[in-house]
Length: 295
Image (cartoon, rainbow, N blue to C red; front, side, top):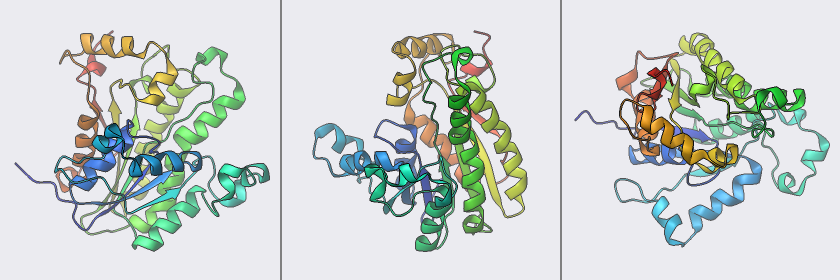
């Protein structure tokens, strides 16, 4: 076995909202491999994540266990709302919202600067951010306002995060890695994936390729993982019959089974490791082969 050792590396993982998300599993896998983990969570989700990390409930305790038997323990959690690039972009009504008012800064640039300065830069950036307020509506019924908001949060945030992070990730020993999450709906029609999110994923995929070029001269690689359907809380919000979608993918994929979140996490470890030192601008499909099928 070729070991993957991230000892001495720092990973900024965005988008953790609970202990069922891909981001949670990715963060755990990175810590198990030796990385120091810093989380960036939406201000409204900070309390939930902090509660899970403190909880004594059996399910929460189990969800914090690493493969080594140790416990998941992020070094720090920062607030980050990917709707905003700088605090100057935040409307006054948001700043005054009680869920935001307790935080002095939470825009992308501010969060990245805080992490970079406190930890002396970082080596890994995980983009696990997606949102559409009209996700349950089909594309044809999605409003312009919701479409633009979804695009800004779900796709442009990768551009904004990478731009803000690049100075803190440039020319790190062994190189640095940005990994985002996408879905086959960015390439093929998935009718239930509404609110403009299919278009957002298509944009995310093209942006990742362009970003790979723009930061490649600083030895930063940018890749995406296209994960198969998985019953996270966010996914269940898309469609109440999401289990049927998982069953369909499992039945029609070459491996005839659904994916596990650990498999997405393990693929992320590969992309962030020296084993993928010449891999950038790529989409790695972790979907049991479902993407190659015609149905």
